[in-house]
Image 1 (tube, rainbow, N blue to C red):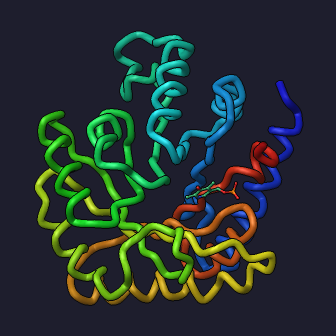
Image 2: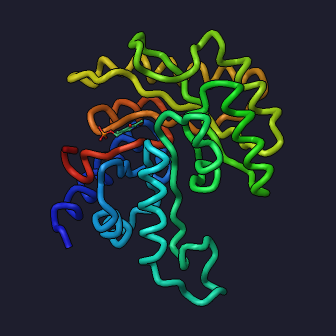
Length: 244
Ligand SMILES: *Cc1c(COP(=O)(O)O)cnc(C)c1O
């Protein structure tokens, strides 16, 4: 067992809890999505042993290999304990990267939540596959707030139409919004983007949509994100160290 992993997780929970309390909420109101892109299954298994339960991957193929690998390692408990198909481990896998259309079917089969819906087309496709799988797919809409060309997401101008469309899809459960600002050395520079996402959510709620989840904040800026209302933080490096 890697003792650094334990130390990292302890420190992270301390910081998340402290930020949650400073934001006037309970630490239980902020979910930790451990981002495992490029992290090998053995280390993910250690993180599971240390109590992490929600994992985020940004590529469908990479996730598919790891998830089947991990499933084969987790010894099934007797069926009465086996609620989630993970031998009593209630693991959740979230897709946090761009979803190509030709991966939509696999994504529906693999992920408990898809955080990166950014068009009505991809939402319709996911809805179709979810119906075929007999599943209600939990989703978030990814909003593009930064001006960078490379960032995916729906523009704020088109967001309300997409919220309306996704909300009407039978096999999708829209739970909230996600955003990923560009990288800043100074986390304060990310704050306006987090405020903007929260305000967009509040606006949608005034129109009658229920969007409890705000997925925002990464290793370098999660405390600011929590202070601005994040309910999910997506954190890789602060848990697993720098990526190669
Ligand atoms: C990689 C990634 C993260 C985590 O980034 P860290 O800096 O390692 O915490 C969060 N969200 C998305 C969408 C990512 O691709």
